[in-house]
Image 1: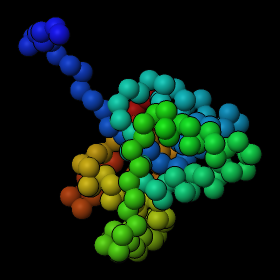
Image 2: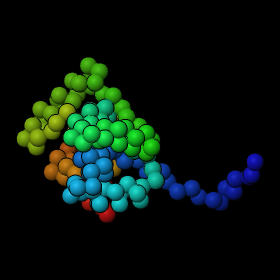
Image 3: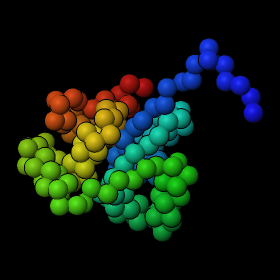
Image 4: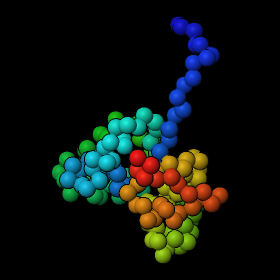
Amino acid sequence: MGRCDPRTKLAPVSYWLIDTGPLVAYLDAGDSAHEHVVAALDDFSGQLFTTSAVITEAMHFVSRSSNGPRLLSEFVAAAGVQVFDLSQPNSLSEAAALMEKYADTPMDYADATLLLLAEHLNIVDILTLDRRGFSAYRTRQNKPLRQVLDSR
């Protein structure tokens, strides 16, 4: 075993939430955002997080292609995406409250679960195509989420 040099600095690990749109766009070469999402994910070396609601929504959209669900499951596994289930009664209640709060935006259930996950994990970076929604949403600490595609 080698010795660790204390002067060596490790690069900080990046954490991103990932929304439905980028999952679908990554797998669909015909999607207008495909190249932009592929470039972002190919350059990313951190950890991706999402929710089971996002996976459910993405599975619905990719099922239009016969191999879409398999490709999505393979991507999630290969990328090591950590998927959180926020469907317990307390989380459902919190998601419903957020959906009411942002009804004029609007906010769907998958978006609500991502905002809850952002608060739970203290992550502010999100890979999303929903610029309008995620520009409006704020955590309980009034923090906006940073849309990583906008910074590229």
